[in-house]
Length: 239
Image 1 (cartoon, rainbow, N blue to C red):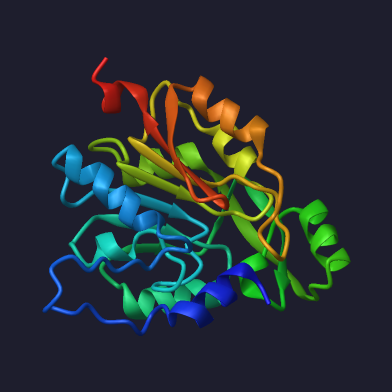
Image 2 (image 1 turned 180 degrees about the vertical axis):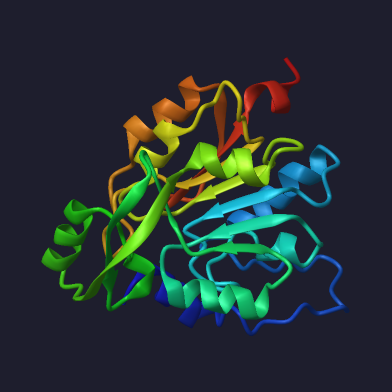
């Protein structure tokens, strides 16, 4: 059972409804409460409806970093290479922009490895091989169009920057973040999977990935072990 499934079973995520009698109650739809932390960051900077780009969006509700902001009326672009996932987004979150493509370091058409557990789908053959060694079965291989992240910024965010960039791309997260032109595109907050996958969540932290983001002008504000949340230093510290 994957970490995402364990969390869903424990907390029954996706079915819990807010209790209007408890003014202190906080509802999270994210994997490990990341959306609550991110909401707090934006509230401190008076941003009620952050503009979001979610790469590897996975599911409209469950383990999703942007559903909380969808409920607020945010502008959101959801990207997932899994056609079935994007169909769910189109049905449930039709006011968002929902794209069935992959994001990578270069454009083209590439093999997409669809696992029996869809939360582990990946473009990385190395990641796919590691998953199979851990006992995860490959369901099928399909061809999916891939574009660069800069093209997404240029096409869908012409009138301003992205407030929240969320990346959960199973093995190609570093490739995506390395290809981003930080000179022209500087998301205020980046939430990214920052440990190597293990079934029990004890994977080693991706120091190379985190150092790269920090060197691009970011400060690691929070870490939920699986995901790291970075804030742009100029935006956060006002320098």
